[in-house]
Image 1 (cartoon, rainbow, N blue to C red):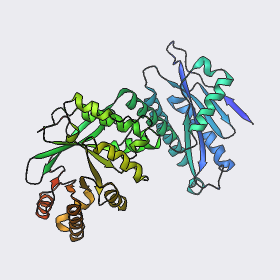
Image 2: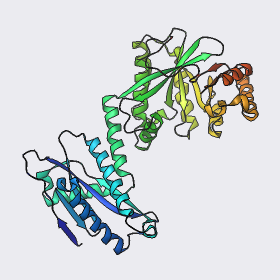
Image 3: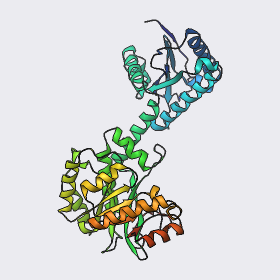
Length: 396
């Protein structure tokens, strides 16, 4: 394989970084039939990179740059004061900047089917990276990481998730659930992340954890945090805790673990409602029913979340026979102006009463919505109009 290698070294001021990571940059076709850009595209790209590295301050920091055919490998320093995740973010920014800069110079007809991929290796000390065998291994890791378009961002998120799980960087907030026309019936425990740079909210965090095979560990951590912070819960109030219906697949699932945590806080299972979330569809109802039967036998209750948001929710109600149905915000929003939503909710209420299930309306934000729901006979309500999530249980 043809290789062209050039080197650019930082000025030796006695404070040169000792750790570097290899960054792999390569153009990939958005069309699966296209493997490599035209030679003129690559020639322009190589010229553009050499010019940018000569003009930009980054060029003075790059320890080594190598072209392997049309793929570029840069050895970029990780400064001693920079966390690896921040360095990953800098590389992501570099990728987007270089891509946008070069595409602005190339005719649109040529750029339409190409995107710049980036991959990164773990940090290496400079002495190790100077060895050809170690450089090859690091470069190979960077190539593997760079096969997907957003691999740098995924690497950042993977490290952030690992840190969340290792250091327990979740905290609970509690949103009140009111008896219609009455007092606080209970609270839903919601998870928030101490460091929100990497995930756009808890849904994104749990979705990523599921793709990475870590959703059980994250679910378990969230449940532990929710119970640990629930000391203000009233003796006759409920706490709703989100769980995955597929929790039985958790290789570390230990029956009785939740009960031990409750005893430490002076709570009983009768105060806890496990809210079955549909972050992923329930594919094995027999296993889910087995899990929930285990919890019910200890005194816990069950709620189905997001009712009205899709067919799978209706199936979950039929199969799991919960104690509560939480009606999704999409059905509650503007219900005082929408007869179709009203008819759907009436059907839910009739169905729930026949099965002995109580109904909780989620996402109430307008007084008109609340009045309509009260008139229709909904049992409980939750939403910003009634109370926002807060750290610590208020009014328990």
